[in-house]
Length: 222
Length: 105
Image 1 (cartoon, rainbow over the protein chains, first blue to last red):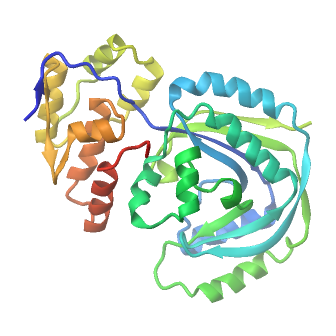
Image 2 (cartoon, rainbow over the protein chains, first blue to last red):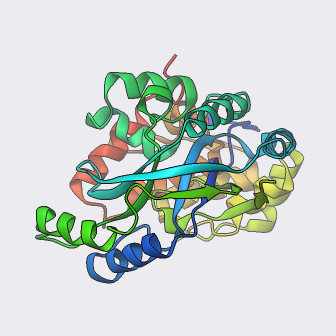
Image 3 (cartoon, chains in turn orange, yellow):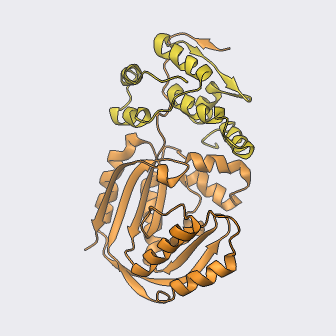
């Protein structure tokens, strides 16, 4: 038993994360997401279709400084065009997603990641900490996790819009892939204009539906 | 189960220099702690004496070190480990993660 009288501690009280994305308000994607929610128990059902640029854990004490800097950066951006590519499936999380193409996305990803990483103070999401020893990450992803607090950055960043995952048992992945391809067939090789950036500072949680938003804003690009 | 005295906890955390927003975020949905762990927090809140607590080879002081967490946050983390409904896989994963430092220096 360790006993220390009059002990004062200065550790973290909370774990918090900053995320930056663009909301993609597309009826075909919304319909496919709804299908995954209703039939396959998609655990990301509450999140609108979005294109994520960065997810950076950092302490709440740094929020105000980061907020000023990211808003100033976003206000200089212009709307840009993305092309919807094809449906892909990620076995690691049983997730379906649409690849999106644009030269702008990797640039925004890199700039936003570097901008926010300054405020990170070595934070890493608790969910990722619990994955470190499980063999979940590749060596490259682990290196990025240490350096940027998130594994899917730079070479490991794949611009995409999630359609949903399945949580129900005994799913025929090939059959579901074909069904989703048909539902999304009006989308392939089509383009859309990205005209907003959504920023959100929220609590770190194992499950996205348990996250509490502390601050968020959507900035229209002009 | 032990219910933390939020007013007392908040006053102590304010006196330690934490931001009110950060404190409220921690305390607003602070869980009921399992009794043995709760008594450690109760002692600390009332006397500032730190009595370490160990379960499955993981101690509260270890969590404070590996995750850089305050005792009140570390107790919340440890409380997850005490949950009897945790599957063996979840428990092993949590124990492994709590054994390692956050900043893999």
